[in-house]
Each structure stands twice: as C-alpha cells, then as structure tokens.
Length: 363
Image (cartoon, rainbow, N blue to C red; front, side, top):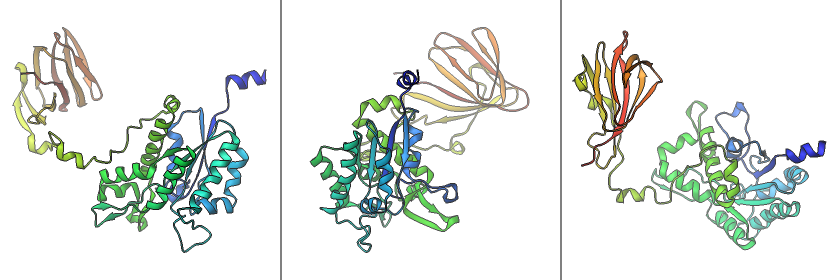
C-alpha cells in the first residue's frame, strides 16, 4: 500500500542550483539582498523542489574544492535538474584558489558538474553569468563577463547541452531599464551605505529568476504546466533602438493638466470633474477617463451603442441598470453591454469617483 501511494504521489522533481553569490540564499539580516535562486521556487508548483546550493564567493573551481559539490552529488537523482551558473569569481586572477582562465580551465571545471548530472540521470542546464549593472558614464552598458560568457556558450554547443544565456537576457533587461531605474534592482541601498552593482535586491532577484524561468520554458515545453507565475519579463535586445520606428510614442498623463469641470453628462444633475486621459492620443482604440461626481451629481439615463465599464474608486452611488437599482461602492465594477440602459448618481457625503473605459467610435 505504501508503494502504491508513492506511485500516485511521486516525490517532487529536485532543482539543484550550483552557483555563486548572485544566486545564493541570504537571511533577513541581509535584506534586501537576495540571490535569484532564492526567488526561483515562487515560480514553480509543488511538483518541483528547489535546492539552492549556490554559495557566495565561489567559482566553478572553489565550489568543488571546498566540498560544496558533495551535497549535490549525494542527493541528486534521475529526473532532477541541475542549474549551473558561475563566472563572476572565476575572473578573479588575483586569487588562485578561485581563478579559472576562460578558454580551458573554466569549461573543464564546468564539465565536472555536467558529468555528475549525466551520471545520475539528471538534466544539466548551463547558465551564463548574470550581468553586472555597469554603465559607462550612465549610457552604454558594459559587458564585464565577455570571455566567460562565450566559454559557457561554446561548451553548451560542443557538448550539446541546454543553455540559458542569462548574460544576454539580463543585459537586454538592464539596457531597457536604464542606468538610474536599474539601481533599485541591485544593492544600491543608501541607508546601508551600499552601492553594489553585482548583487541583487529582492526585486532584482525576482526579476532575474523570471528571466531564468522564461528561458527554461523555451528549453523544456513540459515545464510550462508547472509555472505558476507570469514570465513575460525582460525586453528584446533592440527594445530602445526600436523606439525610433514606433508609430506613436508612449505617454504619461497628469490629472492636474487635464481636469475639466462639467455638468452631469447625459442629462445628469449637478457638477462633475472629468479627467479624459489620452483623449488626443492617435490610434488608441479605447477611451479611458476618471470622472468625479460631486455631491448631488449624476450621469443621466442613456441607452448604449457600445460596451462600457465603470469601476468605483471611492464613495458610493446608486447605479440603475436596465430598470433595476443597485447600490455600488469602492471596489465594485459595472459592465454595461450594447443595448442596455444605465444611469448613476452620487449618494452620501463623499464624492463618487469612477474610472470609465469604452471603445472609441470608428469613423
């Protein structure tokens, strides 16, 4: 009976992470510092168990020579996955206990991980090092891992190994964020007197884990069914350059610039304030506005030639839909379909604030 139960509920598939400080775990005393491996399990369902063995300061060499590799070797089994990301500390030529020259030594040490995974029936996945946040005078993002990133790519091609090119994905992500905004994703913490362009904040850890899972899904379509969070993250390599060909620019609107006092529309009573966001934006297929119904104000009854959504931001009101009255308050949403009639009036002492959206009329 025990064996039958185990067959119905197989043990979770283990995901081992072998890596350095950019992936490793940190306690709350180091907050907001986190490694991307620390955020990985939030993307996966219970059929996976993340076992993060990444250690700060380790290279592909020192991780093995210091004995951290043994913990993985002891527990990894057939069907598991090993994510392998080194490179940051392998570059440290001043430290012979960690340094690996990129052409031969670095890939040779990486092959130790690959060989173990293959021998155990697990799947090794090579990962190029996550990019450092190093902008040249706030403009061009510099590639600080060049030869080491290429060594991982070459090894993956030579050995027919799965590859997540995290260096490329994270560089594209950083370029799209820009120098200033990207600081929030790294350990730029003035109150801790830190300005660290290598180690990730909690926000950065989640963002980089998202990039890892997004690429992992491309390698293994079966993973998609076990991913529990959105992985539409990052940006293309040409995200900023493509803006030059953008037909219509993205915009930001400020309420203070567009507020318009109006009487109640559609024969409604009282006065209202309308905020017609992006009214003049070309090629936008919908209208989006905030409307405030002041005390005693309303939107009069009218029949719809389009679908329309109201969302109550604050206050309360009485919403009449197809001959029936409904009390509405903050958090309620109302969808009026084509052909229906509706009206709404403010109730109580507080202004009734609405967000309104509907499709624009076609010419």
